[in-house]
Length: 267
Image 1 (spheres, rainbow, N blue to C red):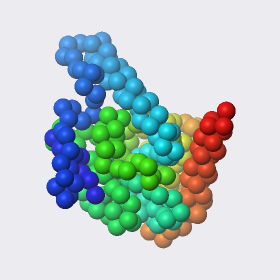
Image 2: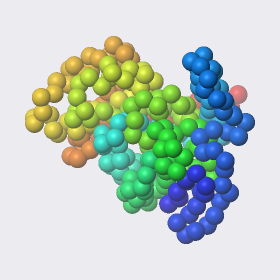
Image 3: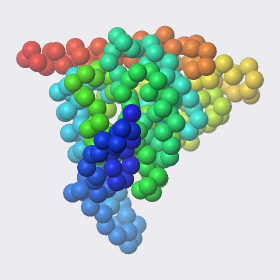
Image 4: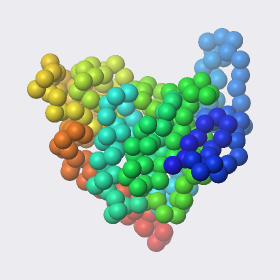
């Protein structure tokens, strides 16, 4: 497993890699002093524009390698890591998988996912302000720790947050948001950008429904208004209920990208 922090991308076996100056912006992006509301907007636009440029480069690289990239996002405690553990168990060894894990601190999630046998890169943001998202430049740096020639599926477990990760393209093919029933029915309405930007939603911890005052219909109606037609998979990471449909959807997306790539090469 690899870990990325502000100063060093390193192997647990102490194999060093070059440091970089700022982990979530290309060196050319720069920063400006926030002197007014208008100025602040310009700075934000500049940051997002720089991120989009790097995301496009990432996307080109993934396409050239035939790698499908899934960006999984959610609030903390939704069950992302457990979902990924069970998802990897159903995908491997049919698909060669790798994982990039984002957290502010610790390698706990990466340690759990590494048990699958998939190569895992950990990104920690605590040493540069505790960023609440992964940006394209960080992903580009983390790729140096992976042999992309032997990867079919790269899963990025983004930092737990329902706001910032939705704003940053990292070069992924699809985005998935995990929402647990323990978070309440109002989260899609409160954080609409996340649900608008994602391609599918996983409603997790449905095994707890008998013990909660929670009406799934309220959440699903809200999601349908924000993102009509977005597929929603009800599942339980604990029991495995609902995983068949979710995993099949993911396999279908990967197969579709392969077909598109083959058609592109045949032209």
